[in-house]
Length: 487
Image (cartoon, rainbow, N blue to C red):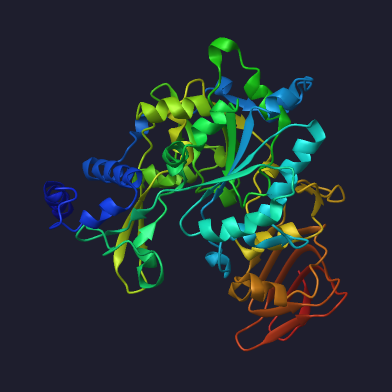
């Protein structure tokens, strides 16, 4: 095919680093970044067809997916403090707040009582360190998009009882989809050049952590495991039961990798799932699924669990596998269209995809409460509401809520940006008895509104609906001209 021929031409042209070739300026980015990109790009050129054979996929054996209830039934030993002293918390902090209409790192968006994602993380770890008299450090994996701003903000935590370290994700060039050549013409990342570069997905954590020197530093300080999660997952707190489970595996079966999975609902059909493949646990992402099997992949009956991206990983194993170049994570080809209309691709990897390289890897099926990501203003409304109470930086479902599931909330485009969202609520409604909320169009909420059951509010184009202060809406549909009907 044309693209195959083009790949061969690009491969032939890769006289890496000659001044006549369009790649030569890449040599000026760090040598490690360049090597990493070169390896990833070469692998991309060689990939033929899907990375999995569908008939070789099996459900993971039950003894490799441990139920959280059983783990929590174990009594925590006195040595839990010693285990904590071997732990490092790593938060993936490479993302910007742009999808929520915010400038700068996503981690500095206020999510609860003026606390940002970063504030909550620091409070959680400080609470652990004080309660158990331990030293659990926090490590942030930044990207070139978030590093400068994050470092400025970190100054405010100098007097907190948490040692904070940062390292940077790699910086790779976006590739023109047609020519397979880099879009960048120089090394600038600001202004017009900003969109020529990208951080290559969180699978880059292994190489960039190793290259930063921080991995060796933490091993030398006696640390054994990292707990990795997305900084916007407010459910991803250090769980002492999982930590204890990890630390007490039999000596001959030392577990090097735990992936927290949770039961799929209809909202999670695109999430990656754990499978058994060639006698290893493996992460299967929707991007790897042959088109003919996508519906099967999305089925809640066949693939019952999905990856929360809360991961517990051995530091010594990361060092060993990186030095042996044995991670072998599948390449995710992420197509993008730049502002000028140019079609590009960026090559990425996912941190969980390395699970197959680690020894004695396990899944732990955790409660849904450990997966509370804030990706949209609809998620933000949930975590700001009285559905959750905040204690030492951790959010827990309010005891006043009679059932454990969170309501389904869908806010329309007028609420997308955090600033607009906040302007539309004089105070966050009481949502303790809410099942489902859909809001569309120009809608505002007065103080002390209460929402119960199923509430649908739709302002037609050109109309505006103001829900009055103190209103109680229970199983109601509110439409165009503020008629309130029973649902």
